[in-house]
Image (cartoon, rainbow, N blue to C red; front, side):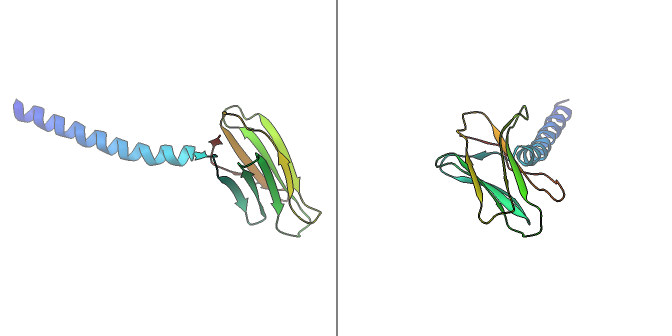
Length: 127
């Protein structure tokens, strides 16, 4: 009886360890959380990029290809999808900038090239 219990306990321990190993990377990849304090957060593609500059709560967007299409981006609420800021660049020289005072909510930046609309997303972040 004791050896059956020991094997059952050992099996449960191995199963718990295996489940913990499988769950942790999936959770990390899913949330991809970043902390905004004193750092910049970037989302990019081969067509351009969007950056959140924590110093001053400024968002920059840059179109890096002169192909007739611009790039667009949004700051959205991570949980509700509410758009707080829209910004675009293209058709002129230099990058475009807009400020938005972020609070303690969780945010995500969405960025896309106007030619195909494929959305690239930043990790979620908050201040």
